[in-house]
Length: 91
Image 1 (cartoon, one colour):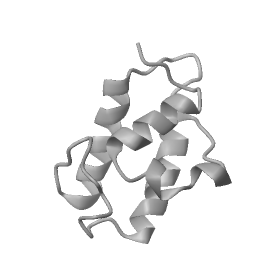
Image 2 (image 1 turned 120 degrees about the horizontal axis):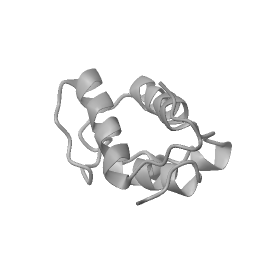
Image 3 (image 1 turned 60 degrees about the horizontal axis):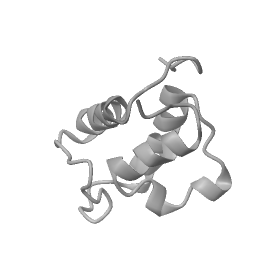
Image 4 (image 1 turned 90 degrees about the vertical axis):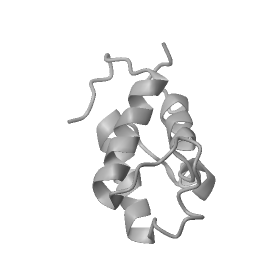
């Protein structure tokens, strides 16, 4: 369920949602700094699912310039992206 723009998420809350999504899809427990692509577990299809998950869950629009691999390489990088896109605040 998307968050309303008025609901503020912390870094930890964003990370937990991302980690939960990854656990559900891969059956692997990930670390926030672990490189998802170096493991070979994350396919291009899962990468696109991550983009959609980020957009829907955190009510952000991932624009073309934000589709760079480095923004999705780790849970920490995705969290930073969500925070940067301005729909969540680190409180």
